[in-house]
Length: 327
Length: 257
Image (cartoon, rainbow over all chains, first blue to last red; front, top):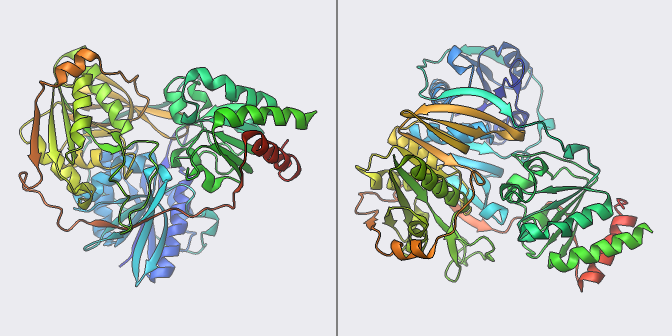
């Protein structure tokens, strides 16, 4: 019985670099190891990853596996699935955990299926009950939580949501480095270049105050209502994904996992329910204010201040009060 | 090109959800239901590809009898026919079990392209599409924002974190999970609604497909409201009053105004 943490790296510009979420997963792996009294190891896959692997040997781990192959230079679900599957078979790990990144979402279900298992994706917390692992994840875009247990024999697979575990809890130590060369064949999938769309004209990360708008605004013609609030506060206007998908505001104003990650002094969420994809992009904000008609909206779980009400009445009243307060 | 689009019926987005007294699921008797939003984008992408390249769009849906409504809406938007895996207790199947149902129902269909939404708005595992690809032995790509058909192959745009994208190419047949916002959704026309009434919906059952929910490899044991990570100060009363109280706090406590 052992735990295996599969770290993620990507070479976007220059040499391979860590995906920061991997460190949170490593911290979770160490915590599970303590609680379940099992050894924990970590793996990194790719090409030219010696530096990253040796960085891992300075953590409190049993083994560090450097899984190196020319065909792992650029990610494909076929090659990554084959490589991790062979590593899991070699190490006989019983619990295999991953950061819940876009890349992991692309290959983990394939890996689990190849082993006849289902991965528990997007885990936000865990606890141990009678020596058994219970994972907590969200349902209905964060409106409800659910406890999930594994049935049958290991290996058990899970991916952990960004921010669910704290990277600063990682224990230093030493670990034995082991190279592992998987047997791989060429993928059917041909990965091409990574790119960003046209240069961002709006840098939301520099804003001190952000007013952000979501589905509650109902239609494009209502955007000026929140623009007035942003103007009154001297804030940048931002939005949740559906607003940008609909073209009501440009994509560059999107906050969330696929948009920008912000941490302003104040983040004012108007008509945003607070799906996790949005929360990961703003929950580091110093003060969070939420205006929403649904008292059970997940946005209130991270809000410092809130008004449960109709934004079309609350926002104009708020603009008036802010103007008064600023006089 | 024969395109299969997998769709799921989920509780309407603004539903007030209550946990059932058993604690195992929500009270679902009086909810209204709609197509899972990312699946609506997958359907639209399928329809647009058919309009451009010809062929057929087949809708595949596993769900209870009420899902027939969502299937009819997909047919009204332009899908040619549908397969309904009628299963009242889909919750007993884990993601692998559900994907096995879909794979079995496809039987001899042999599609060139299978599309799903990237995740469901209810369970949100985001796995069914990728599992189905593995079961069917197809190459796949996830969270797709653009699809371009080539000769016997496709070139797609994958969304990554922080505004990054990647182009990926693969041979057909293949499976893609589609991201919301890839296209503009259409509305069903009156003519479409009329035509849908005569389109084929083939009904199959889990038992008829030789599938059962036995021995799922993961099990949901308890559903509950999440705890708050912060103590939220809520202001109520008439909007003007609540706004005044909030502004006072923002000015003198949070000191952000």
